[in-house]
Image (tube, rainbow, N blue to C red; front, side):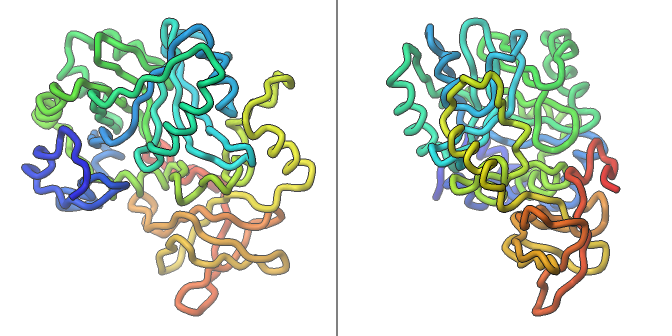
Length: 360
């Protein structure tokens, strides 16, 4: 038996199919992964993401510390609650983890992945020894993501006393109300909220959301939604041996100011100078078949790559994938499936935004 979130009983009560996910017992679906995917695209669904790790950073040198360990520029967060997506890199430029950091009043909040919790915390604690700052993990807090075109309105129905604050949230902003925290962020390509809740109150909140018409949604739909949205999954699309330049995360690197010596910068600069060997691309297979992780991608006259994430897209009704391919790859490739090479197209990521196809 793995670790359980404070919502474990709610998952059992809703007939959730429980699987191991990074050492946690989590629901993969509650009956129909396809229906759960579609409800997020069309209405509102909610995910238990209490397995994520919340880490707060405070102290006189909190900003300096984050500027050292993160590839993006935390100083450009211009107002309270503003959030930033970034990579935390090792000295070789590989991605230890991808995370979100929020600017608070005199402190910062980060949310990191559950599967990398131990190595993340070990790295963060090691690096903070050189700074006048403190790390505080917040295991007493749970987290629920409510996503979809009607998600925000349905949360406001349940949390009427915070409806005004929720309405005023900008995209990629999060604000605290006591121990509660409302962020207009997500992992689905839809509008919505990620809400941090005291663990003792989260079951009541979950049940109230169900009463308001929000559908419990499992990790299976979360994966198809995030892949349609072109969002990386740690351990598939990047890891500590892959640089952000090879993982479609080049936009998360802040090269200016030039004197900001973040960890991994020298390795990234050397990689750019030598020539980036590979890149992450989107692939669509508009014929029959489903692309899966680790299938070989053959690019005629260029070389070979590998699918990092692949699935059948419920929204598009054909298979989509992300793959790491040679840097000079153009717009066509072949996927090795059952011993045959199947033609496919390379497209710009993402595939779907707000329920609509966005690639050419």
